[in-house]
Amino acid sequence: MGLILTIVGTIITVISFGYAIYQSRQIKKLEKINIEQAWEFYRQSLRTILLIDQELEGNPNVKRSAGINQAAAMLQEMGMNSIKLIKRFSPSFTQKDIDVWKSQQKIENESQEKAFRKFL
Image 1 (cartoon, rainbow, N blue to C red):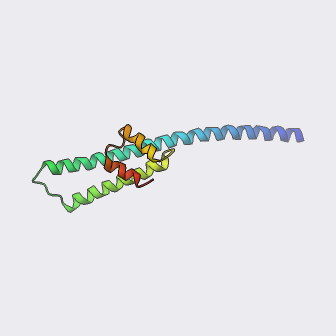
Image 2: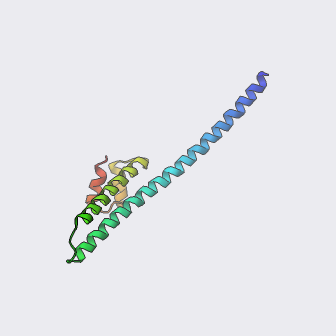
Image 3: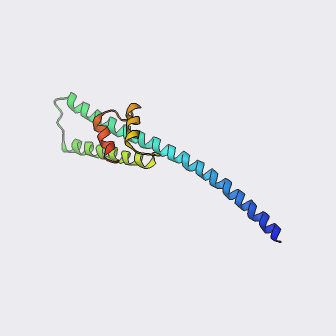
């Protein structure tokens, strides 16, 4: 009877270990997807802000209304929230990482770098 319990226990242990490896790989895939989505969210919010600014600057007949100002502020907040997500899902978030992201042109200018540095 003791031998049967030992064999069953060993089988359960091996299955549990295999399942833990599987779960670990699934988590790594999800983390990769999350970081990619956070970067895309960041890029989209920046591009939208730029488009709004370009439209307003290119058309002297259009004034910045309260609604446009509010939309721009919300987009800036979305950009900051995406930086928080990037920090949460990145393996590390250091000045060295920020420098690497600058070299990869994920961070395009000093004001963007300053926004990232707020979260160091």
